[in-house]
Length: 232
Image (cartoon, rainbow, N blue to C red; front, side, top):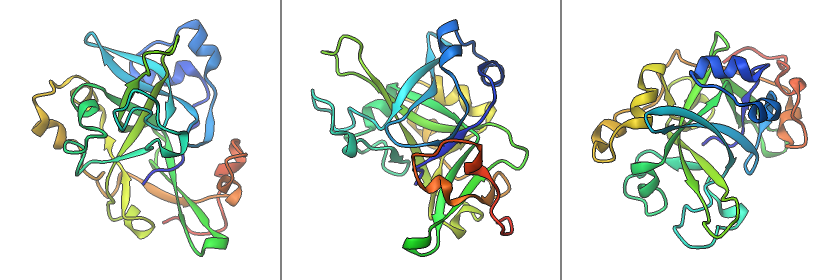
């Protein structure tokens, strides 16, 4: 499961440099650091277009996951897709073949503890670097003047660090497999499935952070203030 995540890089140029792309002037103005990205929020994803990487703004929650001519209700839009069934599910198999994307992030949240005192854990790289989540995107519906682009994040079983809190985690691609995920032919599904594995155990650390992040109203650096507890 991945229900909230972060991308706190200070500038669009810093992010573009790491992803090997360029923001245009309009995109650069729209970019801002995010500390609590929630479902239905706009975010940047990376897709492969004519053998090049391209950044585009998307809404989190796959609008066409059920394949109908009308967009699904917002609450029903899947924010995650299970790696184990992605090639068999009518909701995702077409996008898996031809509309794969990379979702840049630098961490994501899971929660632990009793229902009325949930404690957020921020999973991130120990060096503060970028995470590349495997995702799918859709464009539509076609009857809109400007079709909306939406995305979902692919999840797999948790590694040993994450499983202390949750049994699922986002698929984290390494830099060397990013283009393979974006550009592999649809027929090469075995190679694509081979990328959808849990991250190695030392890829992420878990940091207890401010319960402020429990509310989607807050999206500021205080969300990542370290809670008085030991690192996972």
